[in-house]
Amino acid sequence: QEQLVESGGGLVQPGGSLRLSCAASVEIFRIYALGWYRQAPGKERELVARISPGGKTEYAHSIEGRFTISKDNAKTTAYLQMNNLTPEDTAVYYCSAALLLEDNYRNIFWGQGTQVTVSS
Image (spheres, rainbow, N blue to C red):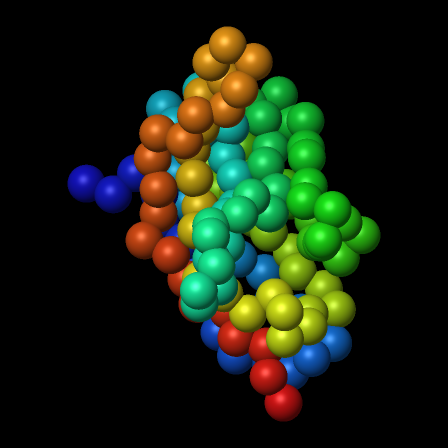
């Protein structure tokens, strides 16, 4: 049984917007911090944004001001709203569920990934 299910990726023109969704099980949504990572071809996977169970958010500097992470408690779903997309945002985006252990987050679960392509 998949714990995290992503959706919402696709092809968008530069300057456009996309919203990614990550549906989580009730237990994961309640206990884990939900995050979005991305991995571009030939590059390492990097954190894009994370939201804690209490709603505290953090963002990578490269996307600050353009992306917003949020969550809907009733739907146990986290979202990544991406605006003003550039070709450099092209990557596979992964949802993660992490626990805070000894002041560091440790990813426990991963979604299957969704492709985001920004191109004219």
